[in-house]
Length: 337
Ligand code: AHR
View 1 (tube, rainbow, N blue to C red):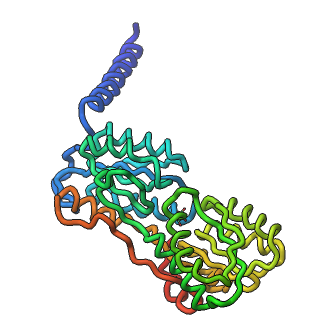
View 2 (cartoon, rainbow, N blue to C red; view 1 turned 180 degrees about the horizontal axis):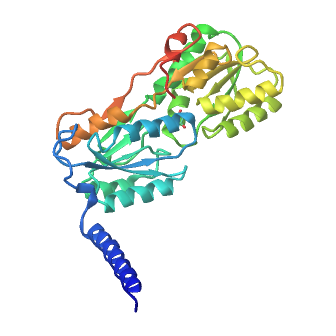
View 3 (cartoon, rainbow, N blue to C red; view 1 turned 180 degrees about the vertical axis):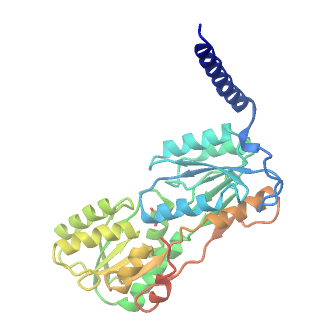
């Protein structure tokens, strides 16, 4: 065997040993609790490990929400974030939460796709002593203690605000034919907005809700359902669309038929992402009820309060505005999503 061949074998063996060493150390160390920094913004001397299950990436709002959380729960800020995208499947969220439990994270954060079906997995997190924060949407569980805290938009109030705008600007006595594009069935966002809207609208007999159908919070589905509405009903006066993405789809459907959005049909939307606010400015959307996706900083505050055993509120609704042509200009430049 020549010197060159022997050297090659030595180098290969060393590389193999190093990889094996890395593998071994990966097995015996819990990387989630590495003491690699002495003091973090959170006040802890180690990284706080957070498992975050995002429900999907169905909308502009959702992407902004993911970025807000990822940009806040960084190593520089003292976090070790494990992110999982459930791609609109509850079973994927349940799997992700179970994997966070087995990795012994310090906190679990998740944005629940739907309200029901979480008792078992959240009981498992509770039994493992891991606090759970629901972000954005909420869950229905039999035992309240299974959720440590919630932060997000007050969806019921958002629905109410939409109907109150209609009352003020269109009039409760004006006969109105209304169609509603609802969001993902069984989600607290869709349920809450519908509940709040009906709370006001049901008191006005002149308002006629022709149909309510789910567009699953996506642009494609919003367009499809709006096309169905336009084929089924003549003279629709108002579209209530429970998020901006469905509104974008619905506007496309209207324009393809020569209907002028915001004039022929009054449009009420939710979220208030930048593209929608531009449409409010241009008169295509008449009113946009804000739902803020920028929840990262609030989640971070909650995590530190929970782990440091300081006082925190269980329910943390965030402040949200209502945008119309009258006030939108002032907010356009600063809107980042
Ligand atoms: O839960 C918040 C809602 O979900 C937002 O309105 C929507 O855009 C998102 O998909």
